[in-house]
Each structure stands twice: as C-alpha cells, then as structure tokens.
Image 1 (tube, rainbow, N blue to C red):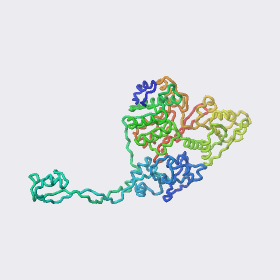
Image 2 (image 1 turned 90 degrees about the vertical axis):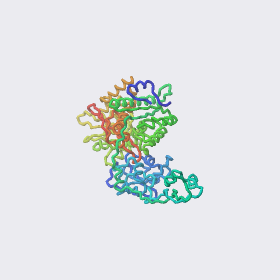
Image 3 (image 1 turned 30 degrees about the vertical axis):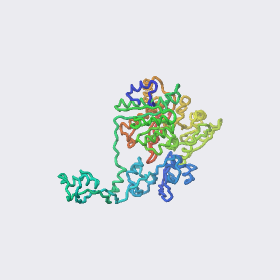
Image 4 (image 1 turned 180 degrees about the vertical axis):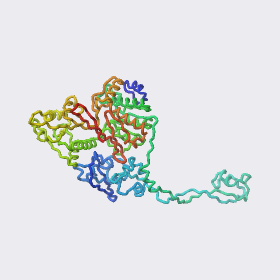
Length: 602
C-alpha cells in the first residue's frame, strides 16, 4: 500500500542491510497565583512570542493582550505575563485537557502542591515529564491534572461471609436446602461434612450467609521526604536491542515526473540511509520502514494503522501541519519519539513531550543570534546599515537592537543612499577600535551595495589616512553567495550566524560527498541546506542517542555530543510538559587568512 521502495533504492537498502517496510534581572520578582481570579504568571524566556505562550497554555492571544496591554508593543525575556486559566478563556485549539496551571512559589515543594491540590505527586510528575529538581524552581509553571486524592481515612463496603444454624425439616433434601438458601452443594458440604452420610430431619447444620459491612481502612500516605525525592530519582535507561524507525515523507510515487520538492525528500531519505549504514557498521541493529504520505491526511491515517508505526521507537517526517498534527498525537498516545525535520512553524512541540523540532523557530534563532552578536561585538563600533528591499530582517534587527539596549551597548545607524554611502559609512566609523557593519537586509543585492566601499575603507593606502578595521556581520543566506562574494567575505573578516553550515573543505564533508556519490551515482542537489546531509545528521544524532541512552534518551540529552557535518543539535524542552526545540546556533567566521571556522553557541 503506502510502504515503498523508491526507484532503485531497494538496491541501496540491501547494501546497507536495512529492512524497508535572558534578559538578566538584578532583582527577582515573585508573583503569586491569583486563584480567586483564575490568574497565574508566566516568566518570558528567550525566543518566546505571545502567540507561542498563548498556545502552550491553550488560551488566545487576545486573552493575553487583555490582561497585559503592554504586550501588544512587544515582550522581553525576564518579564512576566498574567495568564488566565484555560477554563476562563476560549482555547484556540478547541482541545479541552482540564489542567490547572500553577506558578511555583518560594518554599513550595512537590509534596506541598500534592496536598494543596489533592493530587497524587506521581500524577503531577506524569503531567509534567520535564519536571526535576533543576526545573522545579521558583517562577516556573507546571500543570496540575484533575485527579484527586482520596480523603483519609477511607471507607468501603465489603461482602463478608457469616454462618447461621438451620434445623432440617421433614422430607427436605440437600437439593432443596441448596435451592432454599441459594448456595451450592459444595459450600454446604464444606461447612457440614456429616451430610455426606445422608440428610436427616432434625439435624442442625450451618448455612453460609453473605452480608455487606462498612469497613474503615487507613491508607498509608507517602511521607514528605519520600514524595520530594521523586524529583531526583535516577531514571533507568530503557535499552533497545533493535531500533525500529519509521520515515514518513511525501515521495509522490504516483508522479510521472519527479518534482524538485520530491527530489529533495528522496535525497533526505538517501542521507538517512547512509547514517543507518554507518551505525550498522558500528554494530547497531536498525529496522527502517519508509512510507509515502502524499498530500493531505488520508494516507497518513492509513499508515498509522500499521504495526510498524505502533512498535516504532522513532518516527521521522511529514511536511504539512495537518499531517504533523496526526502523527504527533499518535506519537504521544504510544509514547514514541517524533522528529519534525523541516518546518520551523508548528505548535505541537509546545504541548507534546514526544516532539523534537529540528528546524529552529525564527524567534529562537534571532534571539540567540542577537545574544551571540552582542557577545562578539560588545567592544566594537557597531553600525547598522538600513537597506530597503524584499529581504529585510526586521525581526532580527529588532531582537539585536533590544539586546544591545538591555546591555547598554551603543550602536549607530546609517541609511543606504547610493552614491553617498561611502562617505556616510566612513563618518560612522572610528579608528581606535574595530568597526562591525550589519546590513538590515540579507539579500545578495544588499551585500553587493556595501562590500566595495567597506573594502576600500579597510584597505586605505593613502599616507595621510590609516585604514579602518572593518568586520561584516550577516545572515545564513550569505552561505549561498560565496560564488559572488567569497573573496569579499575573507577581506572583510566576515561573521555570519546560522543553524546550518557545512564546510566543503572539511574531511567529514568531503567523505560524505564521496560516499553519497559512490552509493547513488549522483551529486547532492544544490540547495541550502543540503537535504542529504540533513538526513544523515538527523539519523546519526537520534539513532545514536537511542542506541546509547535507550528509548528514553531525553533524560541524557546533556550527554549526547554528536559532531555534525552540517546541522547542529542542542535540544531544550520548551516547558515542563512540552517537547524539544533545537536551539543550536553556529557562528561562521571567514578570516583574512582565507580559512573558515564554525563555532557552536551554547
């Protein structure tokens, strides 16, 4: 049906032995839960948006704006928002889960919250998979499930067997006695073994009688120390002998001509197969099942009925949000890790602990890049060049300005005006420190407009003028401009931020290109990022994690160190009950000595 082998990939599968089927606060402010008005508080973290915060609590953006009018103008890390409990607002998702949200207060413990809400501590932990001693902290929020503890002591009705005496009447038989008292002959003989010798009138026998009694029981409640220790209890690794993986992508096997999108998904699959083969050579046993999802949800619903899906340790794939939603719900129900490899715009990660989002949402990417930029250039003369075109980056520029303002880092702004730019930018530069220039647009046209004047100022040879020390700071897209601008990037000592980077001159990337060509007799498609390498990195990271740390590898994320060749992984849980977002960031540096370095920002 939907299980597939694409073109000549059956051959490749046999080769690889795969079965196909913050802002810093000087003073911490603590907000209490306003139970009477159904209000709790959320402390904003880096990269979060009003929409994401509303979605994770199941309320609407309008609800947050209503309680926090100032948030319409923007929010910043470290600030707090008043949030209505879901039952007092209309949830945009339409899903009712009946959780109460609680902001942890000073001196509160897991035990005290269990008593306060009359909910077993184990149920609170189950509702918050990310809860631990490091995340049960003042100001953090947790979900309280609707289950309730029984009141002590408890009473219950139990059926108790008693006996009564009965005198046998004339002409009565054992059969009649049993019918009269609705008992079996076995029960009667057990209490009256003498009846084996016959039934005689006048005999006094015992008759079993069932009666209900109310019995009071004292149920032992766990002690406070015992409950609080649940947060620090070591979690055993759930080892997997044979890793079962399902890949679901729109391969469109019914297409007569393969589209460019389909070609990219096939390349991703091929890269994943290379990862499977690499791990197989290291002794890892893997079973890979591959499915064509097509468009829409019809095929996905059928695929999710397959045994290979319910038995999987890992599901990778889907492109469309309606497909992703179905798979995410399925993964949550069956406790399967689910990797979303492409889209950065999906809400399931905000409330599903099994979801791993590989592609970093822009808000998280921009926040971390702004932080990294300020770390790098805090002592530089920072100059923003305003260039109006279709590839402007207002969200990143806003994040960068906000970060600089919060750190009291001065910066200048210059508006690009064609012929006067060289004069305008020189007027903003200084000679006693390095100057870093950031255009507000990521376009090739923007780079072409500023690179010549900047190089001229950095290479002045006039005796009466010293050259300026100039650096360029820019965007992930600049990696695709190396044909036109590589020499300029080196000359201007350029830095770019990106969540993807493959150094084509590195031995690891060269080896991958060679293996890919040997396996598939073709080169990778010229895309950014390379889908084949993305598939390889994703497979190596997640399959390696399961192999070493079991199906519950999330408990050891800080120990997983995979040296990627293109895509870095640095997963962080979005809240105590949600999934994981990849917040990895690279700073790529094109140096004057014609070398390139890639540094991870943690």
